[in-house]
Length: 410
Image (cartoon, rainbow, N blue to C red; front, side, top):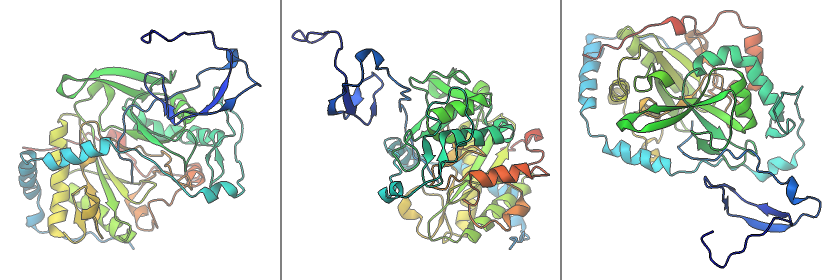
């Protein structure tokens, strides 16, 4: 012991203490003494699943006719823009991302919610799932067990998008509406299906990554109170070469959703000009994601420069509708065309993941035809997704995993 005047004795009394979280060195943060517990013995006290928060980031969130385009919107024009972006000064982006890292994610909702009656919809039990009747979505009435059942039902469709990819988690141990945090490491949680890998990353830094290759890993995430699952654009065994490009359309509140849909189609058409097939999904929040699977042969700087060139092309055409600036002040009445999902260590919500929203909405893959009638990016709840998959015929992303698309950057 460092303190010379400290005397350590065998624990005898049990105290009730409220606190915000455990630190990485097993110290309580913001503890407040509530009283002694005469109903418990010291020998009964154990450290429950800690799930230390070790890294934080910002968490978010009629058929449009295909326009005929002149040669001015050609692939050559985009290549020229991309080359200029690869040499541009990114100091403003670096500053904004470092600011994001220090931001704590908190989804504080109205306390009135807790006073309204809720129907617990838990069914069955999952081995290893503690407190299965705990409400993870109080407004919707979904218990921990019900959420686990959802992931059982979607695992076949979800796992191909999740396997072998580093995971980032939005953990809300007390459920939606409580304090949440963004986490990229397991902390003190010791998973069986959740794996860790130590991989050489950017600037020769060793990265400790979390991933899973089995549906059981989804249940372990539920046990940890994970409400959102985000993934890297690369796989664990080829970390420095992404095989996925994500365009995140993040509209300001006043933007009509029809404009978001038309924007998605515009990006699709630009990509088609470059012989790249893209796929659209809801985010479960406000916007849409456009995904482009590619052969993993370029680094993050090249991929990010390419994605920036695509969205800058739109921004220059319609500066009143779009911005590529991350600053909230630049988004007034505009859609933020987020290309930053393609940077090293950046993540995007994985298809079929639930979101930290009152109605338990999810990110759902769509066909481009379905996009026509979509009312909002949060149109699908947990139960909607289950019904959709149960009665579904053709896969909306048919051929996604068979594509071997190459970027022509030279």
